[in-house]
Image (cartoon, rainbow over the protein chains, first blue to last red):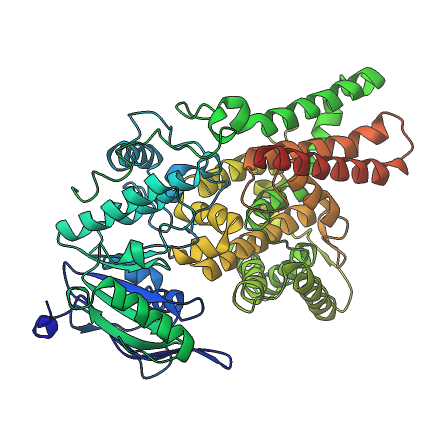
Length: 259
Length: 347
């Protein structure tokens, strides 16, 4: 797994920085993820994790000089729409749902299906949403009608909607930003199983979390962000979880990595 | 896709977090009452007001003439209100449309006077309205200036440009060459039904489809509900906002022409007095002042209620000075009702 440099990564970032006003949130990030690989992204609050994934998603534009590649191809005029178009989907920390809208509108947000006349295929989207909910979220058929609003759902169910949405569009890369936040124990377990299943299907994932006990068991590699820079890039099999924890504590105290 | 068969598949009933949330039976689509309750309520209020008028002044309200008068004046603001519904669903507001009505009439008269075809003059007015709207939309959507403030500014700007261009004087629309457009916009149909009322019906159907059956309409709801979520999912917030303001601009131009042709004269003060009626129609129609919810049907009924109040108060023999107070009451009451409903739904 350590000789992956030969393979063309699914996503590669070269020299990516991001500055907001006078604050530099990301500094010269070099980062890649290979097909079928799960990369854990660890770091304290404000380390730049969310900024990094929003840059990958095209929500933020990197500062001039930074380059993003998808399967070896340099991406230009990057936008969320294009990122989703080539198969990068994100399950955001804030879930990115619209509460007052129906489940099907949320599932197809930004990529609404249209019929031949250019009108919304409402019936088709409702049916797909119902299918996704029973296939992927374990609702027995018709347990939840897709016309109900997201407001009526629990936290775990909302997360289910966000995850089912990310999957529906046949993502090559699924980015999960703190997907276990606010979930109950069993919901967390399901989410972690789900992340494993991404790998089994040969897709890639970036998994961001505070909790290394959630991250460690499911990932192949771990990237540690600290104040906008990559402090360490580790292969999981080469570092026991105890050393990882000590390293993180040391990083928090001294600002430098040593495992 | 075999990716996540396990996801939430096991123990899915185990830990539903809040009892309160699971009280709603979600296996069915939300009941008709839950989905259209507000519209039904608005319709009932409208019917009630009509009944009150009918009882208080049966002589007036049993004759068709009051309804024909009503059908000729209500469209002036109702057409704009239908488009303004889009803006308010995105969580914005446009206060400049009265000035846009007049500004686009300047384009119409210019093109017509300089030998342009009637159709070209008509298009020039619509394009002017749409451009003025696009300007508003750019300032709000791209520059991020609060709409309530900036559209006051552009309102003065558009009105000022119009007054300067017309040197403050009007323009008669009596040239027989204009007759075809006059017929189409404000002619009288069977039994004297005003054409402008037919236009309300046509535009209501078209705009209903745009709001509920187009991608653009979907994005209008999503942006008004949660703009950040929509942006994270790749919805182009800026262009959608430009789009909704353009729609209001174009409809203001259309309504401006109807209002002018109805009196065969373009008054430089055209549009004054439409602001309150239009906004009232949208809010009375149940469109949320917080954005994210609203309906064309609601606005249609809301506009009819406002129009009926206009016509009815005077016809019912109530002192006309009371009209404003009644309007104010209706707007305030409908907004309070909405906030109360919203709070109840949220909790």
